[in-house]
Image (cartoon, rainbow over all chains, first blue to last red; front, side):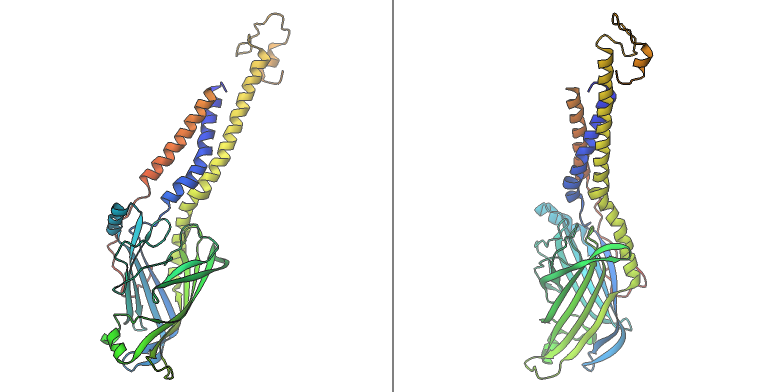
Length: 344
Length: 44
């Protein structure tokens, strides 16, 4: 390779060829992370649900129960943990606020969840809690890791405070997105009574009445595999107050309903995910793919240019000047045919 | 020899770009001033 143009093209070809795997396998795992200061609210609703009336301890049918889930990243705390451990972590303070048809509070459960910003694996650095009780998170919660795989995951349940498998159930299309469907069934399990309930009811009050809280749910998520963000969620959720030590007594239904994401929030999340996934695809697919193709094309061009240069040199011989002027003795070939750059 | 040097320049440039990108990283946002919601928002 002697022509400057060939050398420049070769350098660009190597640049592109090297950039493709470096972006995909070096930059992407380091750059793809959950931002520490993320704030997001999601509203879910259960229409025609059953809800306990704490004044009479009787279940009643209500038109609608709303569940507001807010997630707020504590960026300052995340920075402190990073300084101490060297790990990129996310500290989420969440609140699950349930409201009755009149908007009045039914229950509120705060949580602190600390996890690795890249892998979504829980990080146990202290401060994890649910409803004021220290817990140890296991598995994933709220969000899947980037590049979701088609297999089961361990999913943490806020109510039972344990992790259980959430099963991959196939690929679906949802609002124009190709998503992975996951499903988890939590069997009837005794769970703690929330500290904040209506009418000043406390866990102690419930215990004194001889009641305990049981819960079961079938949880469904539609997850974008690129970002790991659920774009839709639904729960067939049931809660009962059971009489402690009296299995023969009829339990009181505390809540029963099909909880679904409110349509305007589905649209909002889908829009956000569609934007975010493009940024990730730039690093994993678009730029590496484009660079590979461009690198191959540039290399081919460099080789063609170099090949032509070599042919020209062979045709003219060592004594032929670049402008085609024949300086060799006894060469009868006309000048024009050589200057066209064709084969000798 | 010049071809090797050109290839090395291309490789070094790619490495430098990727290392710079990862060193800068994505922008870190601060904690949002918005509260954890204890009412039902009208819209997202």
